[in-house]
Image (tube, rainbow, N blue to C red):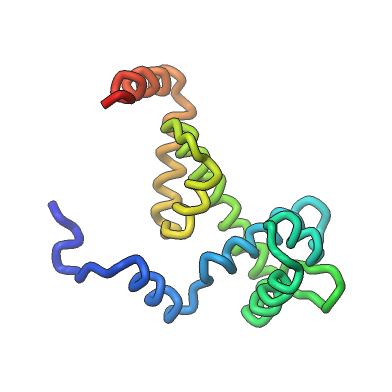
Length: 161
């Protein structure tokens, strides 16, 4: 049964443009917000310099993205000062972090060889509904060691195909 039968297909860029029109964060803004969430979870705030170092970009790039996240109501910050999450930023950041962890757990489960890279590429394309379903699948396998061993055996047999 083809659930997408009556829907027109789009390119990846077409779906990205559709998301942009609906006010969703870009992949880059999601990455920055997720990292701000991670750092704020550790010590309550983040700084431009540590974000730049952690993400591997220059401080002016971080400042530009922080200005956008501030405009969108996800962070409160002053130039050269601490960056803090707003309640909306904590909620969205928590989802982004959870989504990242769910995708990483799934890829680990199936034996990905490029865990971080593939997680980063995949996570932005998933809807909240799909993330919930993926999390349920991962937890299903993680909670049943017998089933997990059967899957691992099955995966090993089909690895060479």
